[in-house]
Amino acid sequence: MPTKINYIHTTGKCDITEYDDVDLPDINQNQILIRTLLCGICRGDIYGYGGYEGIIPFLHQGHEGLGEVVQIGSNISDVNVGDLVATYASDPAFATYFISDKDRYVKVPEVLPKYILEPTACSINIALKTIAAAKQLNGVSNPNILLLGSGFMSLVIGQYFKAANIPFDIVGRSNNPHWDKLGIQMKTIGDIKFIQYDAIIDLTSKTEVWDMIPELNILKPEGILCYASTPVNPVTTNFFQQSWNCYNIILPSPRNSDFYDVMKLTARLIMNNVIDPSDYWTHSYDRNNMTQVKQGFEDGLNRSPKYIRGYFVF
Image 1 (cartoon, rainbow, N blue to C red):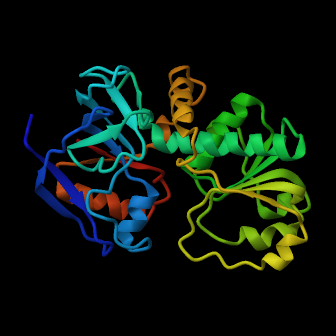
Image 2 (cartoon, helix red, strand yellow; image 1 turned 120 degrees about the vertical axis):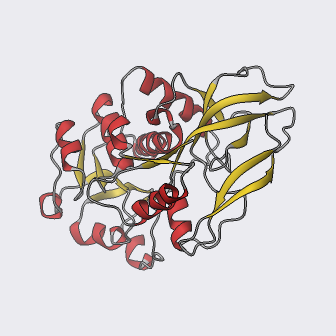
């Protein structure tokens, strides 16, 4: 095993620097050391690269890891050296080796991008939290849901809702072939005007949803607004107007206490072919080629019509 790791880092100026002199980290009794094999390029990483989210601290870039366990702490009993695991919140998975804490990794059967679990689990988490909120707050066990945005997360949620027989509509402008493959026709704003939904999941990077809901009258009183997007611009909305509509706003996150269970559920859903995000990992890049590394960030920042999700191969 080497004594140093290779790592890439950006300071938010569309720059990438490669470091070869970072010490191999020591693990404690509740951690494992992972040799990185794949890592997804998250929107957060891309926004950090483009300067939208400020400077990312050193050794904190890359959190959608998948790799081989090479060392385990004395309190670890659920994996062995040689097992494959997917991780979340385990920076820096853009390094050749990284540490993951207990209950932040899930065993997976193969080195395939569909088993980069974190972004897919985020999508499932959003779906589950919305359904649970509708039931808890309004007593609706099978809510009628509107998805805003048609990218990676919406596609995964669409697969899950279809498998779970949850009624939903989708408004978006991208990835039509993938929605056609699911047998789902996207709608326009005009199609949904004055249809009232039990819940709306906003997966866009825009802020118009706050004004669109009262204008179009598309959310039932006390309905659920699941705000799951990462807007590039600050959200500025008139909450005086919104307060009269009695919305329930939820903000699902991979930081919630049961996200580890959602990760394990997501692995089972993929292994059992309930969902399959394979086609949504559209662009791969050689992590050992700095030209390709740079291209991976640029493609994510300036998404082409066929770009959905990118990942590094180590």
